[in-house]
Each structure stands twice: as C-alpha cells, then as structure tokens.
Image (cartoon, rainbow, N blue to C red):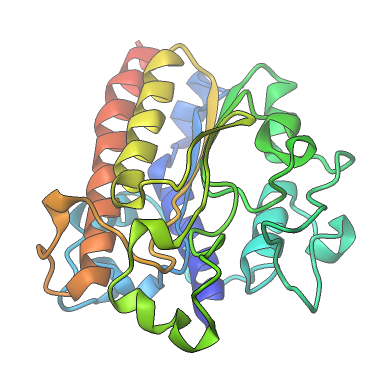
Length: 283
C-alpha cells in the first residue's frame, strides 16, 4: 500500500473519532459541529493505537478508543488531487475531471481545478446554516476560480498544493530526493495563502503545522455557537519534512516521528477547544 493511499485511511480515523455522537446527543443537537482532519502520507501504522513501537500518539489513541476505527474501506485514488476531490464531493474523481495519467495531480503550472459544477461537503452544509473553513493543503486548483472560497468555504488559510512543489530550478532529479535529508525552506517556493491572496512566500514550513492549528482553534472559538464545518488538511508528513523547534529530536522515530508527534499534540489543542464548546451547546 503506497503512502498516498495510506493517508486517505487515516482521515476517517481522525474525522469520525474526533466527533463521535451518541444517538442521544444527535437528537439534542441535530446540527453537530464537524471537523475533518486530513494528513498527507501518514500511515495508519504510525499511530500507537495500531501498534507503532516508538512514535507516541496518546491523544490520537484516545480518540480512537473513544470513537470508531474504520479499518477496512476503499479510497477513490492513491494520489493527492483525486483523493481530495473524492473526499470533498463524494464522487469518483474521474467524474469531476480530477484524474489523469500524466500528470496524476495538479501542479503550480496547472490551469485547471475542481469544476464549479461540483457540489462539495462545504456547499451542502452552508445551505443548512453552517459556517465553513478550509485550512491547510488544498490541491484542487490554485487559481482564484478553483480555491476553497469558490467551493463553499467561507475562508481559506494554507498552501494550495503539495509542500514539495515550486522547487528551485537548480535542483534536478538526481538531487531531488537527497535534499529531503536536510531540506531548507528556500528550496521550495510554495505560497501561503489567506482566502485568495498570497501572504507569505516561501511558506515558513517549520511552523506551518502549528500555524494551521492556531487558525483552526481561532475558527472553532469564533464559531462556538455553531454549527460549523472545519476541513483541516495538514501538509505534513508529506516530504520535505519540517518540524517546530520545540518538537525537534523529541521522538524516538527520528524526524518523521517528530512531525507525527507535533501533529498529534496539535490535535490535542483542537480537542481542548472543542470540549468546552460542545459542553456549552449541550446545556
């Protein structure tokens, strides 16, 4: 099973374990807040709940034990663009045009994106009163007409495609994989966007996981009255791997483990923010 297919497996663990509602809670709150956390290239075996011996993920493990684990299902594609199109529209990527043999995903030079005619989860939820936000990796078109704000999301903050794109011209195929051993921010001229504007380039990727989290927590607090839909698609652990200084060399799983443990602690911040909101709604 390759990495892109595995990253789609982890999304449902996080999405549905994050907010597992009992029949009673759904009855009392028919419009539950919804959060999908989508990681890129993370394997299901990288979590403690699935037996990883050295990467510590207590918060994600707790979510899994308290919620549901979906351990057998199919994803619409094994690479970034079509898998995200399938997740957000519920349709096979070939039906939305988000599938190709060469290239298989969208690139910074691509002129297309998710068609306006496609109906996303965000659009459906907005039609019944939800506030919506997309944070993180989009990869369904970087041009204005294809960005999240044109597909049902009230706001967007993130990198519009993979974090290894916009690579410097002097880096060729030979040293492309070698540079991942010691990546530098300036090697990847990827943009950080807010809504339809570029606010930073190159994106400072060492702090990108933490900044995605701050944006997510801010959205949750601002919409505590609900209902809201948050689509949080982390750029990591897709290579190149970057981690905040606080998490560097903390994991026994090396740099990759550092990245996973940072994501897992960031999820804990979402939980800390969500629980008071949910308790308030239940009163």
